Length: 411
Figure 1 (cartoon, one colour):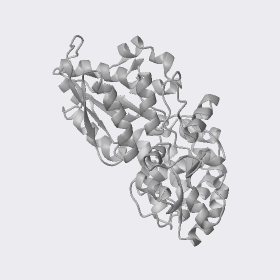
Figure 2: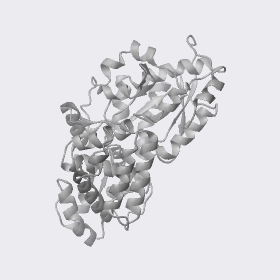
Figure 3: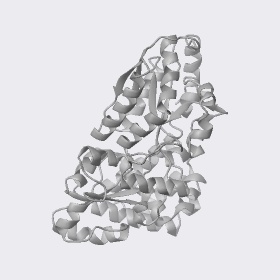
Figure 4: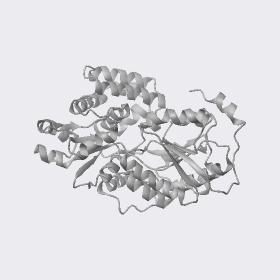
């Protein structure tokens, strides 16, 4: 995407605000539309409305892969929203470089974001050439296996404690008419599951060499071959899921129609809306019960440059509100994610959130692939694993060769 020429054309029409004090309606776009997500977004809207401004909800149905092109098209087409969600990382990089996004450095400096946002990699992902362009709102970790206690009881087997036990329990689940592993059809789900398997099976160092260093030799090696073997097990176990959206797959676990799901901690919001209790109705295994490491990806809000002074002032208020301690607690408890502030009280967190907080406190973390790979490289990876999970004739060996090529050319 080449945005610099368009940015130059729009620059003359952009007026930066500094003094407007009136309240304003501010459209905020995001892709949080499931039950748990909607409950969490309502907390952000309530906090912003309490400032005298008004959150105009611009939810876009579908995943981020569906929503981001729409968001980007509006910004580059001269119809920007007041604020928009992106994942931590490089998804908005070209928009920033094109001069279409607002610099939040003054707000961040005034409110000491560098001191309160933990880990520092979250704010680093918002920083380009020394300027801060986004407000992180949460830490979402991918590395979780969610299990239906009822499904394993029905199958007559113990709830697994790790990935190997889960794979071993698959035949019993299938015999009981239960899908072992729920995986939706959205490409990011299968790609994310592979990344989780990589950390659990090959370890943190291998993960960082492949995605951080773009080491094609490691990607082609025996450690990743083991990961592809596990991914082959996963696709066999997921046969019959027949759902598209991630929350539909989560619902299969909630209703006991599936034994488990590899999904990020945002799945907790769905269990909560369904009235299920961690440790009683469902079990969570960080790092698939093998390697308790979590990624520090998640979500941040960016603020396109606006011509309207009142809306521009409201952007500053929203950025500040998103990082407010009370907002951080209320939102993340509903979302199932961890706060980006290291100084808030989450005493009411459930057992699974407490596991995540403990891992985070120990520093057993990695960056998410959205932070390590460009959007183009991510898309190539998603396309590969979407095909791999959908096409059983693609061998793990052939898939690994294609994966190695993607890593070799990744940026």
